[in-house]
Amino acid sequence: MSDTIAVRVDRVSKGYSPEFQAVSSLSFEVKSSQCFGLLGPNGAGKSSLMRMLYNKTLRDRDEGTIEILGLDPAKDELAIKYVTGIVPQDDNLDVELDIENNLAIYGAFYGIPRKALKTKIGELLEFMELGEKRKSRVRELSGGMRRRLIIARALLNDPKLLLLDEPTTGLDPQVRHLIWDKLRLLKKQGVTMVLTTHYMDEAFQICDELLIMDKGKKVLEGVPARLIKDHIEGYVLEIITSNGEAFSYKGPARREQTRDRLLFYSNSAAELEGIAHQFKAGEFYLRQSNLEDVFLKTTGRSLHE
Image (tube, rainbow, N blue to C red):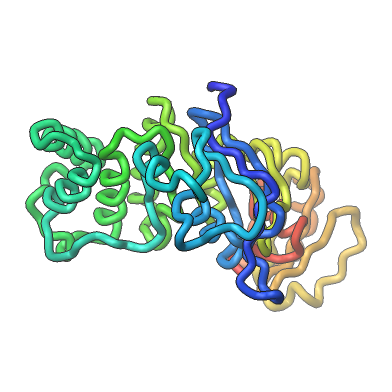
């Protein structure tokens, strides 16, 4: 992995009113050929930050500096768009056109010669496993196919940087895993990626570095596996019965209460198994800790609250 910095964000803030600060003095760096993730719940400021990276007119920052491949979005928006690929959170495909024409019109904006563009479209449709649907209208596609088409569109200009805003939200697990596999392949080919997500498994699976956000601020940053190892106990017992709140426990395991769950954390699985024996089958779940547990410990709330 290169040590060259592809994206640099330094003390960036964006507010929409005195009472609401979407992004607050946020700083991070993304190395070339790395997948950098922004993990947090809806409303954490992930999409506001992402739009500041690629669209000055929609989300101009209040303060701080941003560099994208050495360029400033506030001054070099068009130049940045020529070297980046954008996968927005919203579906903005033309539903009346077929797949090939959606890509052909978009590719024309980059001045790609017609013959080269036709070849590129074919390659991308095969890469995203959409080759058999090339003549299908967008309105006939499933949600997963549309997301794959948007990713294919973002790759038309052979971008050095790919910005993905919640790329798999609302998709079934099979399609999500397919998209993850494609993103891993792109990373191996040297494409740098910045990705926003509220899925902790997505962040863990494909991100080399991760910044956990909440209410516009940085909570933690680092390698996903290291964040779990350094900031949370190894095992967690989830109590999923209404009787859990009344359960009395005075042992060493740490206790957390969320809106609908009682959780016990410990580095000893045996300690948690002893607690679990007091509940019926189906009332508890013993597992290894994950990024959502890290988020809960550091913010006091769940990623999905």
